[in-house]
Image (tube, rainbow, N blue to C red):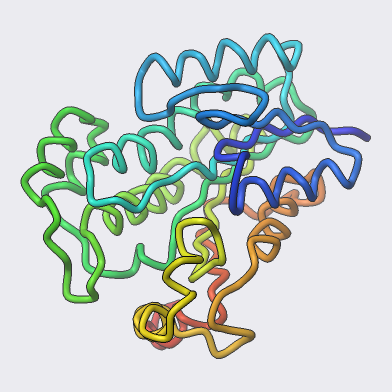
Length: 261
């Protein structure tokens, strides 16, 4: 049976690879991105999020089977919070009513291996409270400061908060009670337009490997690897996996947290 899947960040990287995989399987994909996709929407703004809901509702005929929120940024900027956390949650929440009309509704968001790195407590509190203006003020305070792992607390906290949001929301009546599986995928280093320039140098590869060592087929996964996992989590086959943050990182998370289950 043909399914309709909405993918944000569909014009490049993991989102593009996921869209290509689903279309090759004969599924219908409604891609969302700043440009170069079916729906043009800036998920860092309220207007863009409203555009997403309006245009997807029209294009889908009022029914979607899955939403995969991939769109994300890595820059140490308040905009990164607005896309990575508020844009992702707004996409799946905004399309919840369309998902509820599916016989097998699924939602997946993209977190990151960076979610296990040092985060900023004050920023995390603002994110989990749904306070976007407050979160952006905290991001301005943090600026370009790096954490102990050499990453931006703005990025790591946005991805950690997104994973925590999934864990809290998935088993509720709003999601599981409506038959909607909600999960997160946390990729390690992936060969996307954001990372290819870094991977092109020995120094860059060493830096990435220090933060996310990948003993299984490293140092960087092709975007088709997380795309395959996203496609399955969003499929009708996934009847019972929900509330999970699944690391697809070549082993990095198990190296950093060997005693964590």
